[in-house]
Length: 425
Length: 76
Image 1 (tube, helix red, strand yellow):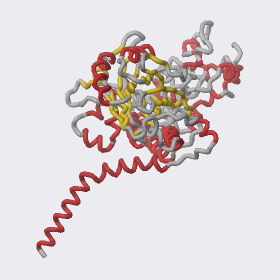
Image 2: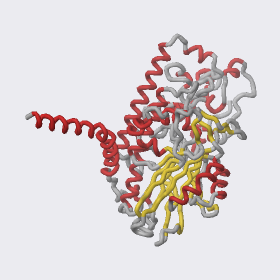
Image 3: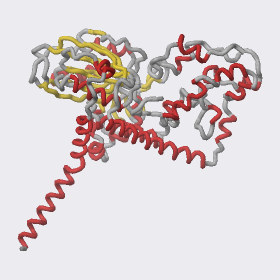
Image 4: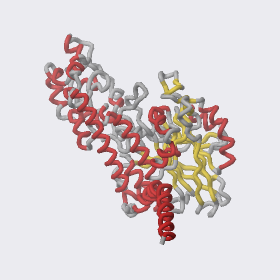
């Protein structure tokens, strides 16, 4: 599901279907870049490679704007450094379409992103011939560090209050355009508040949501819809204008980017190149780690996890059932698509990733695949001292840690659970 | 003869300046625009048709997503 190649193809098909009569914009509501393993002011080389390809891919395939969220900031500073900025923009013009009305650099040698972009198009429907301007403003919440506390200084940037920033900027933007679209990386209640408090806004597209209903919600004159994570489903907001170009209606739907949608060949080439460079960079890191003096086995012996072979010693019956399930071959699923090194994917295909379990196939192969402890929790203490009190698992709550709507849109507990069910033992 | 050589030298100089200023960046933009314009999906494919839905007369559309988190593809 999803991916640039299908997205680009769908957008093209969408334009062709209306004979290019109805302009279609593409926007991203936030979390464009990875901040994985950001530490001491630096991103790992392979993460920088991924981010650079995203910048290229979005530019090459004519995306109109991307909202910057708190997750984008570790990569952003390198893009917005004043030194060499023009050269970077010449190479990656999409830099100028990264927007935020409430992110400000703390370092004076880094420039602020634009608060909004204005896209102009000529209408062929509604009021044919009219130059119609759409203003797209970006806003993000602070970085959540607990359920109730946000952090506002992140990776050299300060995140201002998005509501104050909106009040400051929207009146001026509204004077310049016909339609104001706000991209809001924030929880549902805050996105609703944004729509309610600002009469200048015509539509809010929120992100960082879990579920989506499809229908637009109305708050004053503004509509509110939410983007799907990873864009596995593409949001499609349709705007209907009267013959004097006034907004008559807005409707929304989500389009499953599954194999019904072909790959755009050129976009698929970009994705393949990105994948190859990322995998090469990951392999370099793996080789460096292997060649380093730190014996990786030490890390695995200190693990709170035991591995499935230890479980099988006492729970042979459950082991026999498990080894014929999809869980037991979860890494093979990734290997088929050459994604076994992509940490964003790996975490749901192994035991205890970044929690003292799986690190990499070369160092901790005993924790590859979805094993007993992926669901039942770390079992080393139980192996050392067997007894009651280990292994309780609440279903389906445990399942949906990985089988989320975004990762596993077809997940149906009633159908899936019998496939992995094993007797108590 | 000397005048001709001077004119050729000036012309070459101006040509190199023009290439430096416009050459690389402009061609990249044009290629990028051309890439998407040349692809023509089969609009009669029933599965794609179903995904596209009906053209009900909308004036413009905003297609959107989020949270790709550094990846141009999604997990297997």
